[in-house]
Length: 199
Image: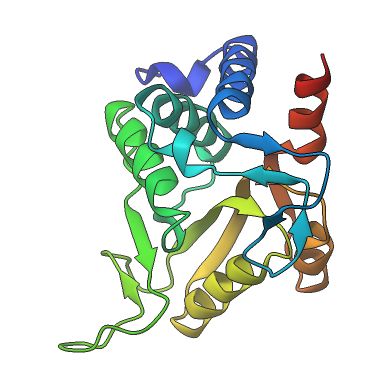
């Protein structure tokens, strides 16, 4: 095989994950003695993860792209994406790495509202009919936005082959996805960030 990442040593990916966790902790993780952070779910929490500080960082984008591409390289996926805005930099990072590795997987974007003109599409990108797709999210709490993305893709006739999150806050999202028939594959859990903060 000519594409290096198809035989990329697993220990190198683990090194990338260690680097990414440290970067997430440095750039994205905030904690407080009291519940001062309001989450997108409406819940209050002493922990906040501003994942875009990492997904939009050059090193973060590289590490995310390498790690997730390694996870999905054998799935014959024809697209990767999720609900805008959290998923966008993740899917673009993976798409770029996939092209470099000569196994291109195009990114797509799912709008929160349909386009107000032209085709009035929910999904932006060039997915073929009944495409095998990977759904990504930056931070999962209840998985509401992830489930919404899955719903839009199913309505369009696509096949979800994997669901990946950068961080699972471990507050019910994995369980909600399981009820809908999907397994959440999270790179990290909130406990990983808390453990690093305590070390």
